[in-house]
Image (cartoon, rainbow, N blue to C red; front, side, top):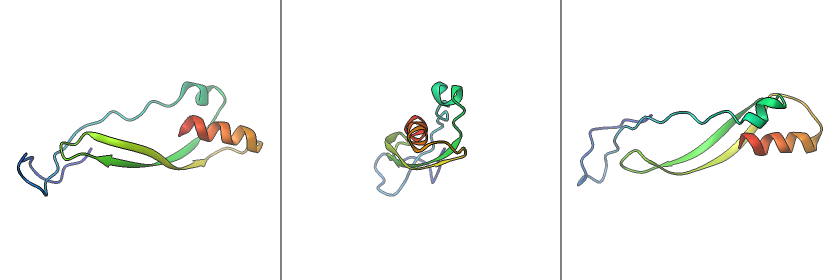
Length: 77
């Protein structure tokens, strides 16, 4: 969540708060034992809505052959 100030639709320097449920852990990743940490870049609109999000980096918490690692990274991203 984010909260920098009260929302004023005429202001040019304010951002309002907004609650967001965390993303669900991918079921397929859970089934194969994928573990990792995903760092996201999130573009937030002035009204608190997410405008865009990309997975910037995926750090795996398991070791596997590279092909399997890439599959897990893709699932978590």
